Image 1: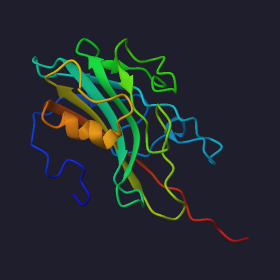
Image 2: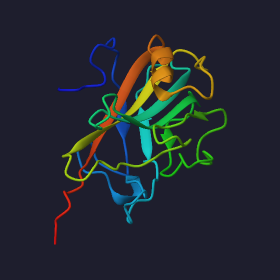
Image 3: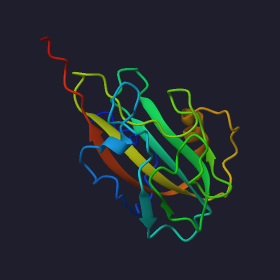
Image 4: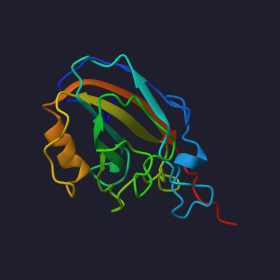
Length: 181
């Protein structure tokens, strides 16, 4: 599809990914919306559970990316690397600023809002529907060789040669245009 973040990446086997926070292709719930100017938003990372992963997986990387943001480069909402291979589920809210719900060894990177952890959806009012690619990548190393202060884009670049499987869901969000009273 148009503006697909996986276009141009090597194809890899797919595995299963589900979420109690939202259903693939449906609107993101209030928990996964940002509280930055949106009262009902909670900036809570989504629950994720994955399975049927490649046996060779040594760790996982989770990202949330909006390719529809009006930035020319999209918007990274969350990036977590080095999730141990035995972990196949993250609870809702695991991606708080301290990563308290993440397994030992997992590392969160700065999102495009400049904070470490998950920042929820917040498309500009009237900009139309945005897609949020929630991706779990199975990788063939237990540690991605990238500095803790790296951008999610650099993480993705360093990750690209190690991905052996991928699962993703797409949540959507849209904020109506303001109505002049």
